[in-house]
Amino acid sequence: MIIYENTKRNFNQAVLNNEIAFYIEQEFARHGLDHNNYKETRSWMNSLNFMRNVLDTPDIPNDVKVAIEYRIPQTCMRVDFMITGVGPSGNDNIVIVELKQWGKVKKTDNVLDHTVYSDLEGGKWTPHPSYQAYSYKRSIENYCSEVNDDHIDLIPCAYCHNLGEEYRSDIEDDIYEEWIKEAPLFLQRDVLKLRAFIKQYINAAAKDGQLLYKIDHGKIKPQKALQDALYSMLKGNQEFMLLDDQIVAYDRCNQIIEMSLADHRKRTIIIQGGPGTGKSVLAINLLVNTVKNYKEFGVYVTKNAAPKTCYQRILASQDSRREIDIKTLFPSAHAIPRFPRNKITVGLFDEAHRLQVKPYMYPGAHMIRDCINASLVSIFFIDETQRITVNDIGSVDAIREIAEEYDSEIFDGEELKLHAQFRCNGSDSYIAFINSLLQIERNANNTFDGDFKIKVFDNPCEMRDELRELNKKNNKARMVAGYCYDWNVKFHRGDWDIMLPYGFNAKWNLEDKSMWWAVDPESFEEVGCIHTCQGLEFDYVGVFIGKDLIYKDGRVQTNKYAVSKDDKTSKIRFAPDDLADQLIKNTYKVLLTRGQKGCFIFCEDKQLADYIKKTLRKVYND
Image (cartoon, rainbow, N blue to C red; front, side, top):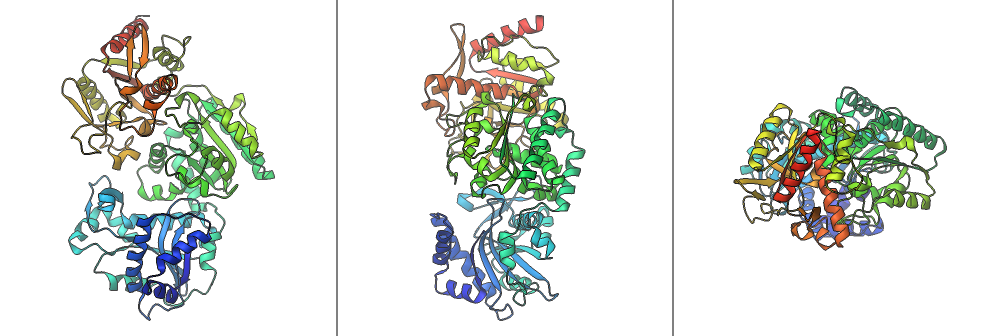
């Protein structure tokens, strides 16, 4: 969707009259979109003045077209500014300009080679503007068939119009060379350089007056290069191999997808499976098959951003270009309400138990409804025992009820249930053991088989030391914790978040790295939370159990008031006691089942630690 489109002449006049922000607001209203963002309005008034100065030359004809706020159809990403026309070679061209108002920046370390630290919103990590512009180009090329069929060239660049020369060495550091080569970068004093760059590609109005219309309304279809790249990514990747009941469910899902491709009828598939049964592995394979073999538009969506970010990185094997190409397959959950009915051929909704009615800043009204409405085939991957916040409403019954409202045929048979355990060293009984240990299920097993290491530590420093050594082997050991600990570092209240006996101090996973904390080789010393590890797994996991879980009077009990007041998502502190009890235990069940080979535990409550040790002695002695 393009919000504002006009000739260069009319755009320049609107900016000169200080009316451009008013016209853009009008276009939002005309498209039926609410826009109540004062900061964004101010940014238009600021940045678009700079673009007018760049375009204010007779060498760029008055009748070339400009577009503002183009939302790439299958994403929530918006391109700031585009100029369309014909270049000296006679090709139709679109110049993409990513605009930044930053006044200060600093480079990151050599690991985060497409990220910079800017003064945006008081200071935050953000994508390098050249990387951002290039990623927009690739997203459009990968899915807009008209761009490829009509040989339309997309030329990205970035313009940091407030950034002085003293920051050039940081933002043009060698670690960003790859992205600046693809999308040249222009700073405060580079007005004439940017003008000359645009003139290389735009010196007459486009021959095709429908150029912007084509990219705005063209069919969303994955291009062959992307199809082949995805297949090769998956083919040699052991993390995504399908086994046992996963392959049965995979075949059944593809059979149902083919039915919908033939008759265009909506269908909803419900995949149920506990922790470690391979729901996400199945989802990724179905995504690749949709794009590669059916040549249709599919997406993988989770409410939690961390799993999808990690899966992108694993698929791309740390290749940033590949990561850009597949990024559009992993849109934010917040993008789903913007899709018209059935625009997505196959929607894969992982961690469906985390879906909510209207989470904070969500543009839709009901996440399950929006998923089913947007998808011809909607596939939900769910484990109702992994609900961890008061607002989580994803359930099999809720999905069935809403699918019926949309006249979507429902499939949730036995062949779509995953039972085989691929985490916890393949021990199905370990999951039952955790249910028994936490007293979630009365009749669950109180022992487990398999070569799985579980150990309780009295000293948290010793637990960290052992995990650190294990992590050196392959970067697959992490520390995690429940909702108990405050975010002191985030709110500038201290240098540490988690402070325990024996001098143990640690920080929560830092916000700028939280989405890829599970795979970032520099993140071991940070402690992960439920939102950055749910849906993911490690070889070894170390769990800090806080004062919200205790052992008293022969029972595992919970204390909702021990949950940190900084926790704004779970709302456990304000939940009824029985619901709070369930959510706290569910949270620790998730944390305790993240390991493939072992789980280490430190309990703040000594009686709880003694209870777990006693239970484990029976396990290992038996």
